[in-house]
Image (cartoon, rainbow, N blue to C red):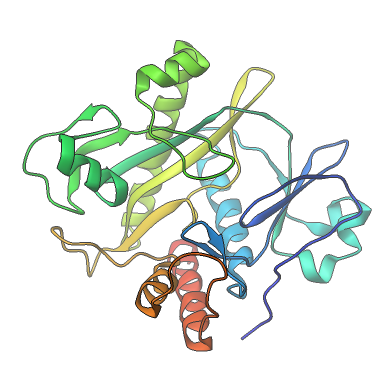
Length: 291
């Protein structure tokens, strides 16, 4: 098992430090580095998942290419040799996990699309027969396929949890024209991704997109259809009426739930076996989607 890359420091101004990504500024764009850090229950664990940041970057690059005809994206290159000198100096460490991207005016909305009823959407449906103000038919099952995909946006919280938004609230935030573009493009991208994944025996239950504006044009940003931003299920084991196993960090979350941890810092150390299983799970979804 390889060594996890948990911290990155470049001789460039740091724009932001997230749970997974480190973002640095240049005069020509931004450098996005996906570390192997892993968070659970809003706390960053002491150990990472080796190679996780590489999987997230490879999948984003792949999907940006797949979806480019439907929406432009912010990716310039993943070739470290074509990036600023500060990145090239750490090429061995950063290759495969780094994107050089256009700087955008980010739209303050997380554009979530759901094709199946799971997670917080399932909880909300049980209480109100709706999700983010979208009314749904009675009698739907947990993990059940929705009659058609729905747009269920949320806020973009810098700390804590994103909060659901109704479509009217999105219009109030960004204007009716931009709201309609966000909704329509998000649904289009989801449908294309879901169709592609289905051909490979994978169900795309839900996903979230982030967009920015560049010269007034809507541009897909951040990441695209990775296991961090999406809920992927194996079509062979799918069974509505219960929760499904996802191709993501669920193995880690399940172990933490069983460990008796009170979900307050510091988190417990993960057994090597759990780290290795999670790494294989990320690699499996990448291989199945990309071939």
